[in-house]
Structures are given as C-alpha cells and as structure tokens.
Image 1 (tube, rainbow, N blue to C red):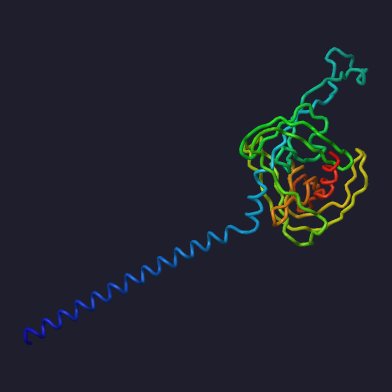
Image 2 (cartoon, helix red, strand yellow):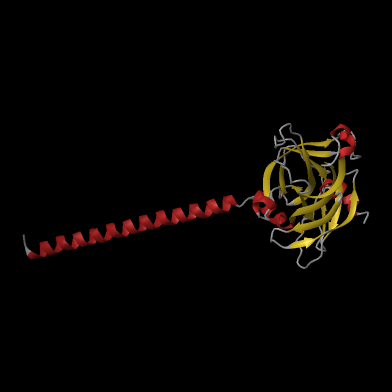
Length: 271
C-alpha cells in the first residue's frame, strides 16, 4: 500500500476518534443537565402551598408557659387517724402548665384558650426565635374559652386572621402549636396536616360554664399543649383556635376541634 493511502487511513481514524469523543461529551453533558433539571424540579415540588402557609404563620405561633397556684390538702402528720377528715390541711403549691397561642397583631396582642391561662399567677410567652416575654391578660372569656394576652417588644411577628364562615368540607387544614416545647427545649412549633371534617359542631354546656358552639372539626393531629394554637387554611390564614380532642386514650385519634376565628374576632372587637 502506498504512503498516501496510509496517511489517508490514519486521518480517517483520527477523525472518527474525534467524532466519537465529541458525541460522548455531549451525551454525558446532556445527562448531567437532565439530572440537574430533575433535581431542580424536585426541589420546586417540595415547596408547595402547605409549606408556604406554614412559613407564613410559623413565626407567630408561640408557646405559653403558665404558673398557677393550686390549693391541695395534705395530711397532718400529728393528726389522729380516726379523724381523717380533719387531718388534711390546705396548702398552696405552684403548678407549671403549657399551651400554645398565636400573635395576630404587630403590637403584641395574641390569642389563646382561656383554660390555658385561667388562674395564672405568671405567664411567659416564648417565640420561635427563642425570645421570651412576660405576658398580661387583657381579656378573658370563660364561656367561649378564649383569652387575649399582650406582650411588648420590637419586631413582633403576627399572623393574618381569616374567616371560618366559608369553610369547605374536605379542604386542607393545618394545625400548629408547641405541645412539648419545654421538654424538648425547642421553641419551634410542630405542624400537622389534615382536612376540615365538619363545621358547626355544637356541644352541651359544661359544668365549668364553657359553651362550645359552631366548632370546626378536623382530623389534623391536635395533641396536649396544642390548646390555643392556630388552625390555618392553605392560604396561611388563621381560621380557628385549636381547643380539644375526643379521645379515650388521651392521644390523638383524628377527632380534633377548634373554635372558629370569627368567635375570636368578636372578642377582639370588644377591646
């Protein structure tokens, strides 16, 4: 074979190698691009209407730490056993309890359940950013089980109050609260998601004078300590105040109730 033929063959081989190399580079680059696009799409999908609603309200969801004074009867160690009734002496003791609440006004007004703060001798409010404020009771309505508190500070976050008058059965509902903030040393609220199960649930008046009317029923988990925290809709608006659950075991079984925010608005207008 002549020399020019060998040169031609070598040139063809080099061109083929170069072409294959370019194809491989483009193919790998395309795969990397597709992977990056997929990752970006996944990140966008994780941020949805629920996470946006939580992000809007979470800074205003607070932990309400309460100290109450209770009267207990303690047995007199020097009493005569026969007279048991007279052997118990009344004593005072301080009891700590917790609840949740939501700030609805930049001036530091917040709403919670009356049963959370009733009889309190000291109230401390803890924000998700770990700031702590003493709180005063501005108004308390035992019949509706609602209380309005006030804290003073700068840069107070607040949540928008919506309405419960047009709720749709089956629409998303999000419950926020800080049920175990003290135990976990964490001021961030917990979040549970469900739907509006029913509206306008009425209950018989209780012996303590409280009357629960037009309650919102939700299957979003409401646990001890969530009392007073907000129930919000997908738009990040407060639609109710979490109040109690139906449970024989004491744990959540998907039957929770919230006071409509419109009832809370009526109390706010009385200030």
